[in-house]
Amino acid sequence: MCGIVGIVARNEVKQDIYDALTILQHRGQDAAGMVTSDGRHCYLRKDNGLVKDVFQGQHMQRLQGNVGIGQCRYPTAGSTSSAEAQPLYVNSPYGIALAHNGNLTNTEELMSDLFAEDLRHINTNSDSEVLLNVLANELGMLHAIDPSPTEMFKAVGAVHQRCRGAYAVVAMVIGSGVLGFRDPYGIRPLVYGSREAENGTEYMLASESVALDILGYTRIGDVAPGEAIFISNDGEIFRRQCAANPRLVPCIFEHVYFARPDSIIDDISVYKSRLRMGEHLARKILSQYSQQDHDIDVVIPIPDTGRTAALPLAHELGAKYREGFVKNRYIGRTFIMPGQKQRRDSVRQKLNAIDLEFKDKNVLLVDDSIVRGTTITQIIQLAREAGARKVYMASAAPALRYQNVYGIDMPARDEFVAHQRTEAEVAKMIGADWLVYQSIGDLKKSCHEGNPHVDDFECSAFDGRYVTVDIGPDYLAKISAARSDASKLQQELSFLIDTNVLDLHNH
Image (cartoon, rainbow, N blue to C red):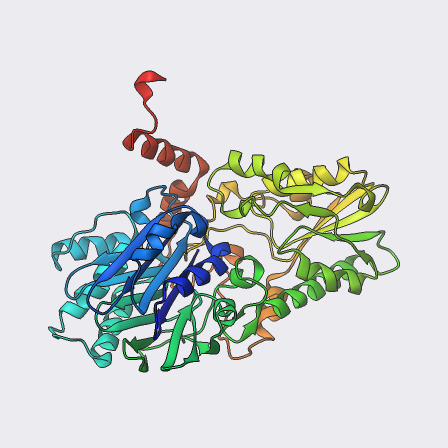
């Protein structure tokens, strides 16, 4: 999962891209990068780390130009190499920089084709570099001295034919402008907007509408599935549908966890969808325990993404809503931390319980989802240590049982706490007195109500149904091995050895 942004402005764009990436920092804390252009030259800065750490004063001074793209990233393959930080760049045929959110599912096939048929070489293991080279090759095949919007769109159409999986892309063609496009299912989000400057209209593409809002851009709409948008250096905007049979099937996990609540994705308010999740979850609890029968004294959210669902849930149950945990905001999101030990060690640094909200009470904790169970087990223990009589657990999402292959680094299936376990078994495993999950049907309703024109939602992490229909057991086994904590630890050790950070001969 990553945050991407592209801007064509009338003045220098570096500060706006920096601000946009800071706003989108929740989408990736592993690496950040930006490339800008003055029409003749491009200027690149990228590295591992948070946005504020990657871009220092001396870097910002060099990032000249009124056109640029940027990305903040966390890796789906677990790589710690700064070489895979984005944007990525190739100088043939025109000089193209690209930032990508998502994951290609036919990367190996494309790598082979690029090497054998297109005579292009890939320097990293990044599927984004593969996507960049596919786009560059298709543009090169047109033999255009200065590619027109029509030629850009033709190249994107060829990308759709060759690439499978999820991709929301911003690309800068040096000297021409910024190109944005989305896969034919619209799995990953991409929105665009405009603002008026003294000397003309400026345009911006971003992963979430909140980045547009805060920078003063008016949201025009979402880039449609299969659609491409080209914004020329002169500030002209062009749009075209480039896929044969597009369908809008966005990833529902954006609404569950990843997106900020103040964003609008595919015309759906993330905030309102989470409110509805809480309402549906309350009705499910009341179907098992009536308002008179349940003994819940207080509903307490696990900050931050559990809050929005917890408020209407408490109201529907007729129970008090209280803030029982104080969060240290300088600890990263545990879902996207790379190792089990790092996730475990961060919990007590991240949250502290307010004892008076727990003491001698039956507490219902509400979270957006339960993945490995490591974090929630410790949080339930914190609640008990604070004096709770009973601790119940409600998840605004269904049980996670399958890998996500479209850009979310979910673990191997046997690392999910719900893998081959019933609801009661998971409750026992995490130490809850009882546990209730949202149903998939209610989760879809919570989002669909915001936009009935959505064809369906990508829910493979919950139901194992992959919208691109090219995902089989062999592919899942391969990514399961690559995403296990043991595999990631080995990759990190290899990186430290390769970069001489760790010398095994002296340890």
